[in-house]
Image (cartoon, rainbow, N blue to C red; front, top):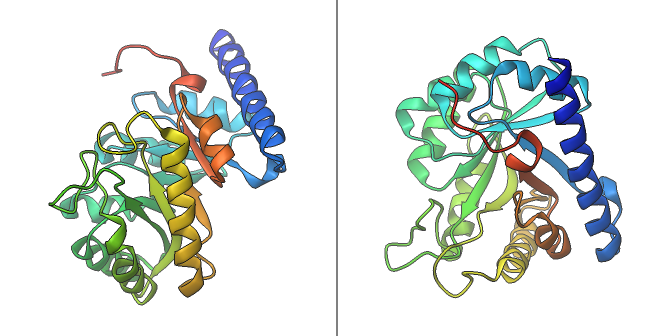
Amino acid sequence: MTDRKDELAANLAKVERRIADACAAAGRQRDEVTLIVVTKTYPASDVRILAELGVRHVAENRDQDAAPKAAACMDLPLTWHFVGQLQTNKVRSVAGYADFVQSVDRSKLVTALSKEAVRTGRELGCLIQVALDAGESGRGERGGLAPDGIGELAGLIAGAPGLRLGGLMTVAPLTGEYAGREQAAFGRLLDLSTDLRRSHPTATMVSAGMSADLEQAVAAGATHVRVGSAVLGVRPRLR
């Protein structure tokens, strides 16, 4: 366990330096960017070590992995983010532990999340996942809705009992005009966030950037970066 703690501490320090350097290059303060460590495929023991090392935000993308892990770590001072595609049949479980759902992209999901938030007496922060590669279907390859759907969905979230509109999230697209242009994609998200805040001033979160492109996200104005492998390492999925 000591070896694993040393490994995670070293990786975390490297990521912190990357964020700090990116903030300095962009003329931003380090405290303007929140690090969310994506702990998918890694055990609750790693989450505990990360908490000991000062991490306060963690993320998961599969409920079947997240639910037992969150339960095992419920004594820790952590904010849990759900960042994966969410089916409505998993909403009851996710609403029990997630503080933020960053992948809200359709009205049916808003209705289901609101129902569970009210039932459990919790308030859920919701980010709209924006697909910058949305085609004629209005959907992206990795989930999300087209930018022209943000306003309507934001209104639904803002008016839904038990939900709080937090802001916007995106994943750098692999196809379309922004493929391979991460900073341009994240800059577009910031523009969309600026538009959103005209109607919803408190929706200030801009979640973008992962291990490979966090610098571009910080340069573009992201408030939250979601980093997994750069902190936890790349290794086979745990069973």
